[in-house]
Image (cartoon, rainbow, N blue to C red; front, top):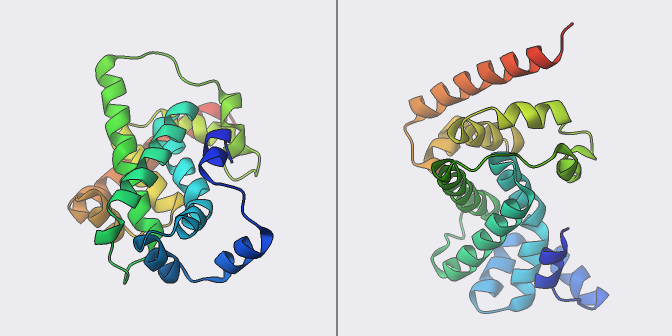
Length: 195
């Protein structure tokens, strides 16, 4: 977990951390809605890595991904009183992260910033072997809209219907973006692998 994230989560006695891990997500959300900092910190611990990963795979920038994930948590805590307890927290947070990441990437493109983060800074995502350098480079070649649907579908494993609801798009648009994104990824990966 990045240092910035560590600073947000205070050290807690082992017994408190153990008790919080056993609590259901719904119970944690209720406690966080009632103002429990411990409950929010546990939600943060559980959801930080996926939030960061989604942001990074969309924006391809380490520092921006940390900022986006942190801003998403701040936005989530501010609106937690309106959260529907019948739904899981993760997809709700992922929607916030995804929308912020798309906005950031669009603003970056509008400013015509050049240069990408060096591949070695993506080591947190490639260490586990889940994401190869080639896949991360290929994702970077996609438009932000295509990158977002691929990340939601294949990293978070959302259904096309869930993606459509999260991004407030027609399902046909989601399916079209997925097909085009997968075709583009296939072309990028074939170019890198000359077999």
